Image (cartoon, rainbow, N blue to C red; front, side, top):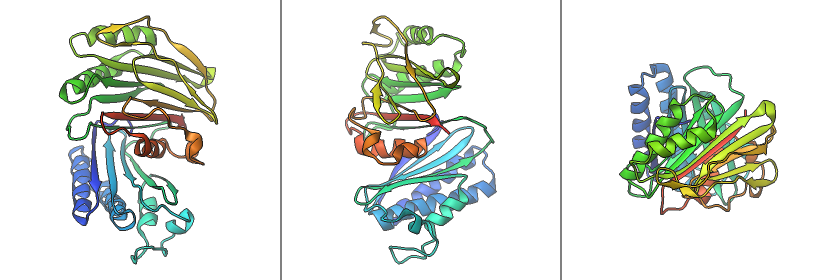
Length: 324
């Protein structure tokens, strides 16, 4: 979820999938040079999270994300949910005839733990591991999933400083992935003093040799109590502070033909949640329909909304930013 350099998402509905998820996560972490002590913690957590999907939800999805600073795991299901979250977190409680230590063990082993569960609607469970200590006033997480059946995703997102970028390459598959990857590279290389309008114009020229796509840039300026948004194409930007407001995106395809590039300014407060979504996410999502969700970790927010509003005929990306 944090501008992931390595990731996977796996359907988990059988005990064999539990082992597959564990091996995939541990192998990626080991290849990145993660030490044995953290690998042992990761092994326990991913195994317990995947087992919970099989035992308690009749299946779901495991998502793993890894970058230079974090290892993050998300388990998403549409199962029966939890009637009493606090009771389910206790080591002595079980609904499946097990020892009942799963959720408690996950919470103890992870550096960051959060969940959101609604009876009859399912559960989203998050566990994060910090590779480096960071004092960051903002929390950011995102989920990108490819068009069903494709190995590469035509969407990409990235964070640099207080700026976010989401790109949706036109179409899907390898050609769309080339667009999104190039946009991400340009974004991560840019000077933060560069105006957003200039950055988007540079992206437009750089993507001229590709099929192009939609691009959105957002910058949060807490000291000025302001968010600046600059976008072209079907990237949805939403601010939610108890009421939901959509931000303005211009018409055009970056890399092909665009109109006038313009940034728009919106108010920001410590209670504001910023959401950015490609058009693989339905536009009717509303945090207000999920009591308490806005207070959860951005990865949990992204997991719930992606689960409930993802369209399965496109790549899909949802990024969430809020105060830590």
